[in-house]
Image (tube, rainbow, N blue to C red; front, side, top):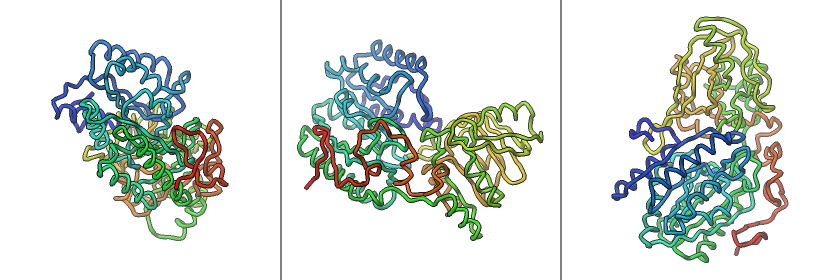
Length: 474
């Protein structure tokens, strides 16, 4: 764990904040191993076994502990273990029975199974998407841990499910008033915390749906009332809560009939943080085929091209087949005559979170220039966060007609300073930009039905953790 704020990788921010909050109150802090990977199919089982063993050994050797804080994505699996969170939490159950407080910190897109709530005392998720509140939420978790340890808080967690899937942009209407009300309820002190888990686009698990988790001071009845109310409010705005994006065809028409620009185009279905390959050529190919040029895109995940470019060297000109390799949704490779303009090693992108410019490793990157397009190709699968990915190579984004980024929402934080023309486009669902319809493109076979929008005839379902049947709220 690095000591300096300016050397943090993004997923280390919660640990940094937990440490700072605990030390400020005079607690002794012991930290075990921290590891991270972009979302994908699964974690290597040998790596996970080694990771778990390191955590177990630290916990047994360095304890006993008054409290333990576990931070994970809430959606982790290996090829052999479907629920890594459950597997990790089992490590602390003996200590928990002897009084150790177990707190769990997770991402907004968590799929945490309710059965795991029996293995922890406190849960805290991010509230914001884009994710700008890592440090704030982690500090709040420590505050709850301290209150629980001193018996000022006897945490009781209530759960409600509106029975729906959604993509929720928390800084926008119509969800923003709900989030503001949630924060107001927390400030009032009647509940300890409220976490709303959004789930994640296109992930096939039994738990990938919205959940409202309300923590009270030993008042499950009131907690359930609040959870139900928030879940009902979310369900009531189901038709407008998820954004409707322009289809690729509509966006191309808009670009061709306008002199505005640059157009920042987010290829959100190829976002590595959503588990995608990050090497799709679909949007780029459609732009080129429509006659639109002066395009820039990156990072395109293609380790083979990076290796080839290193061997050829800067200044070499040769035909290169880029992208379109790792998944059926990646489209076809781009066959381009390219100049290898520049090669940079150990590239990092930075993003401001809670006043900390956190780092996102992007690997070795190659700047390829062809007649119609500039590409930044990486050997590490990473989302597009910062214009710096391009400007570090001398690419002037203001002079580009289109900039295609591999992201859904996070890119907006910094790219809005480049242009006001920001568009999120569903490359693999070409017939519509409507997320409600776009859901049918994904496999949700493991998800219990009925659920909106897969089952659009639903009324107003709300499920809580003590009932399996749908019920309305008065």
